[in-house]
Image (cartoon, rainbow, N blue to C red; front, side, top):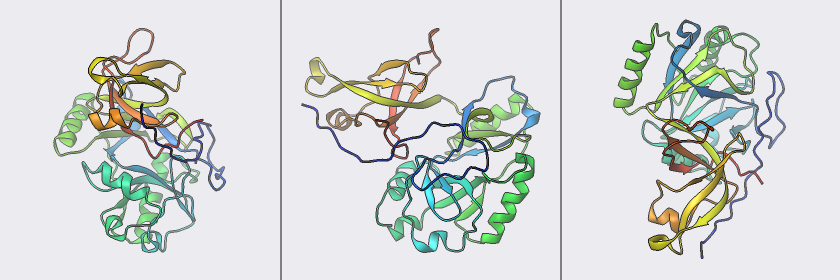
Length: 287
């Protein structure tokens, strides 16, 4: 019989909210979310930066929180002197170190040594009223005022052509990076998913919610055969590839969110060649 873990998290909010509406304590902040880059998009309108593989961090002016609204228990020195200006960024431990970032930010008691390896990579000011073109210098000024080496402004630059963008992607990935982010310069900060922010990777991946455990058969009898997962669109499919033996013995709990990798979609919108990557512990379960 499958052993199921019980994790108590806050409910995830999917509400699209305009700029200037601060979230209540415990609510999921209305963050700008990314679509996927498509060739032919007007690159002249976008700023480009590295995509940092960490845990989304939102400083609401008083408290550091995750994408799902949970309080991040950082050491007092980590956020000492931060302004009351809300900041959106990534809690990042370096290239290829997502596991460290995730485990560090989920600790109920801050591990000082672990946090010494963390950085807050700030990429936006959610409550600044200007366009992203305007917010970049404002963001740089805020980070400069903080003056802490672990708080860094994400570098933004222009890329002229799709060929140059793809070449930059390959260089970034070869150096250990995850991919690129493109942010429309003329856009205001709006919570929700749109083409104002798009991501570009060498592979496609996204999240789905676990709705059931499908028992295994044959050599997998008594363990997980597949996860039945639900996409944000409401479509469901079985995710059966990419699991280790340990994960099949102790699968992601029902209600949790998982990241999966895939290669394109079928005509109906379901992913092709989907494979499990990891549990998204920064996204609390839906009930």
